[in-house]
Length: 96
Image 1 (spheres, helix red, strand yellow):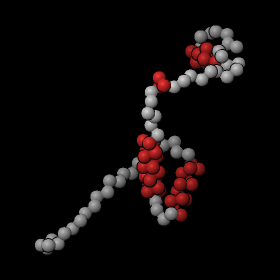
Image 2 (image 1 turned 180 degrees about the vertical axis):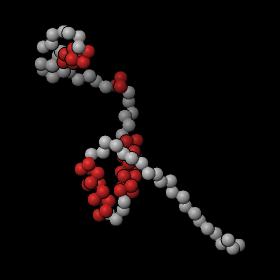
Image 3 (image 1 turned 120 degrees about the vertical axis):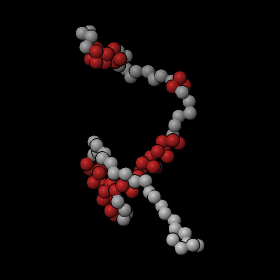
Image 4 (image 1 turned 30 degrees about the vertical axis):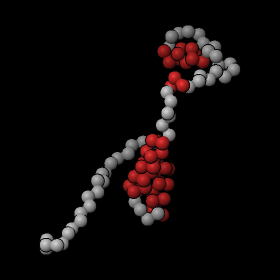
């Protein structure tokens, strides 16, 4: 390198990865959108994840679970929790 000459080098931290259980229709739509916008799928997914993470950080609740008010069961479902326990844990109780 000549004296007085400066070189600026950018290193991008990119990675290849596999995403499992991705809905095929969503994948195809995203890939088509990326092509229409003149970019690759990785760029589109990176932007989507960045926006999602920014939005999620803004939506964090400020209170605690103790601040939540319980809602009553809808009419006719007063024993729903007990019925579900019977199904899940097979307690042998008759339900209904």
